[in-house]
Image (cartoon, rainbow, N blue to C red):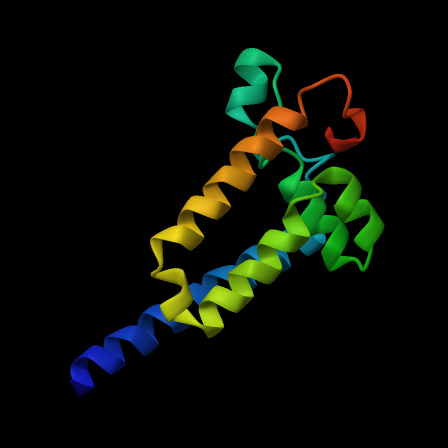
Length: 125
C-alpha cells in the first residue's frame, strides 16, 4: 500500500513540476507574438474555434493578472481551472461518470456556441 502512495505522490509531484514549468514559460513568452508555440490545428484547418482556442493566450494573461483578458480569450478557461482544482481536491467526485458527462456536454456546447454569429463575444479576440 505504501508503494502505491509513493507512486501517487511522485505522479502529483511530476505534474506539479510540469505545470510550474509551463507557467514560467507562459509568463515570459507571449503566445500571441511567439512563432514557435503551436496554434490550434482545428482553427488552422477549418477556421473554426475549438473549446481550447485562446486558452494559451488566456493563461498568459491570467499569469500577468489580467483576468478580463483571460476571459476575452477563452470564457470557459476560468471555470475549467476552478473545476480542475475542485476535482484534484475531491478525486471521488472526478470518478463519477455524470461529472464527466456534464463537463463534456458543456465543452461541446461552448465549442458550437463560440462559432455561431450570434455569440461573437465567445470567439477569442
